[in-house]
Image (cartoon, rainbow, N blue to C red; front, side, top):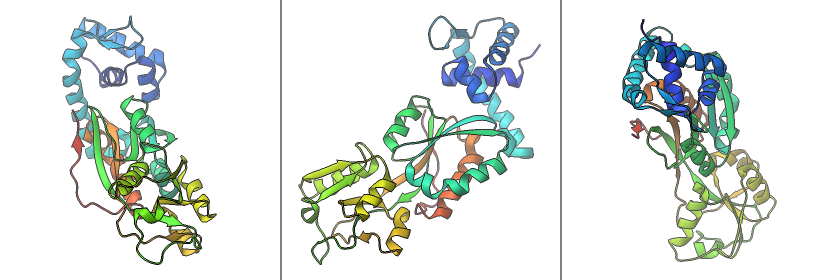
Length: 308
């Protein structure tokens, strides 16, 4: 008797996620169903594949020996499915993380597309700052994340989708010199920023460091939308994504500050566990919505960077 695709998928996700419970949750199955599939697979192969004596399900020597072969077989299975009905290859629970700017500008259009194109997919959404999403992705608490400038470990694929333009903003009537502003002009003002080590925090630090100046009044806030409201109320200046506050600029609620030195842009990426083929259609849908929202400036055709 041969192993089935269902049994091999259960093996693959337990090996990937580290537990029977996580694999069952990811595949949208009950844990007894996943355990049963592994028991059948072990009976077919005549060997134990996981050591269950620890908190995590650790691969045995025999389990490690077949991981690469199972991955290749599932890739072939998905490639065959892509020729007939690609959207149906994505099913079960998908844990997605996104930064706030993506949530505000993209999710209203993106989530209906998920429902229409991937009807068998259940989305569990987490909104957080990039540093927190990066940590959760590396800890396998997320399957996919849309974030800026991540530092990822082996096994995570990173697809860059565009640049997020950042700039300084203030309330319309903030008193500032009538010329291109320098770090010295803003160093003494109340500055609002995302917590370290966020992309915006690093961008502000680099901007002041280039002039050898340290800002005197730096306050952190983990919400870009709240930061924009506080700036509009005259509570300080901040670096914000220009596309995210376009309506506030048009309404005269915010003022774009012209600076002698540009703020470094952030690179928005889609990062996910597993080989490129598995999430290719989903990443294409996300990229499409991001470009339509004008949140990012397209980078052109960029090859995925696969780690590990």
